[in-house]
Amino acid sequence: MPIREQRRAKDYNTAETKMLFKRPDDIKSSEITPKKVYLNRRMFMRAGALAATTATTAVVYRKLNSPTSADSPSETISNVDRLNDEEATRQGFKVDEKLTAREHITNYNNFYEFSTNKQSVAIEASGFVTRPWTVVVDGLVGKPTTFDLDQLLAFPQEERVYRLRCVEAWSMVIPWIGFPLSKLLGKVEPTSQAKYVAFQTLHDRQRMPNQVTGVLDWPYVEGLRIDEAMHPLTILATGLYGETLPPQNGAPIRLVVPWKYGFKSIKSIVRIDLVSEQPPATWNLQAPREYGFYSNVNPDVDHPRWSQRREHRIGESIFSSQRTLLFNGYADQVAHLYAGMDLRRFF
Ligand SMILES: Nc1nc2c(c(=O)[nH]1)N[C@H]1C(S)=C(S)[C@@H](COP(=O)(O)O)O[C@H]1N2
Ligand SMILES: [Mo]
Image (cartoon, rainbow, N blue to C red; front, side):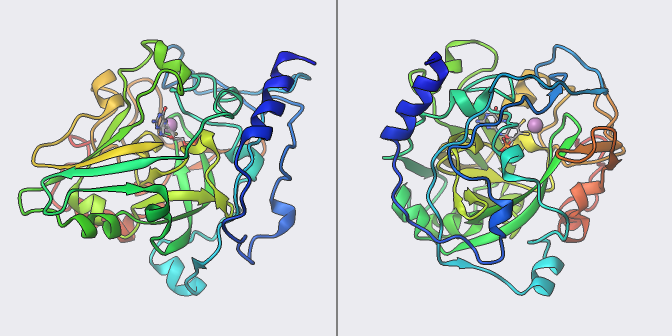
């Protein structure tokens, strides 16, 4: 048996398979990839823009015969609140666009703690153990609290269908499950000095093997202004396609801020601090000229090395692209947060 097959078989045998939740009714089973299906092809190759190595805007695809991606066992999520479509669309909670297939969402990932190769993240992360897990919420709050996973899953879970726009000019449409970050912050009672929220990913070289490299400063950190953090579109995601998050998508809990470039949506969070000053953010520290703290999706602000005017929707024809929208299409909901700010200066 090839070594990778062995490893996957082992991971499946030891992983939890407890059925926690039920799949939402409105997701057709045909859209859901059966568990334990391995893709026999490499899906997409794109120059690693974030890796700061290559900077081509050409999208290059290759088909290979060797299996390069894996799916991981996950649990179904039940008791998911769903708004009626009209209200959900008005609030930006549900975009009326074709969902990206689950196999793409779970096999084309940026998660540098496991690999800088998008097609390898799923395999490298497949044995990632996410129970027990705690998120410490601390800092300028009245009630510092450590939440375990069951407490986080006890927040009423909602479905959100959001666009995800990576700074590398590709995008997806993802049906997340999660809950507003504002609900969590409400529990800890931020003080009036709290102006920003700082987030931290797990730092554990044993469990996140690529943290032995210096490709980024670990742990991965991110931040939001408090009004951004409290915005109803900002969620902590616990699942996608009706099931708990696969490791490669940031299990067991990650941030999703749909009007910002994907790197703001920090994965596998263990710590959230309410702070008074703008907190550090990994890609901003890495290359401040290229990745701003705000990083709102903006087709008019080019990356220094490529245009942000258009994006390739993963799963669509390899030759197709579409216009990128200001605030990733969420301007009606969020533009007011930046009234009076020069969007070119605060990029
Ligand atoms: N901890 C951590 N969070 C991360 C990243 C990462 O490398 N490490 N990559 C970011 C980037 S660049 C993107 S585009 C999204 C990708 O999320 P997805 O793999 O679920 O699509 O995760 C973001 N969150
Ligand atoms: Mo990204």
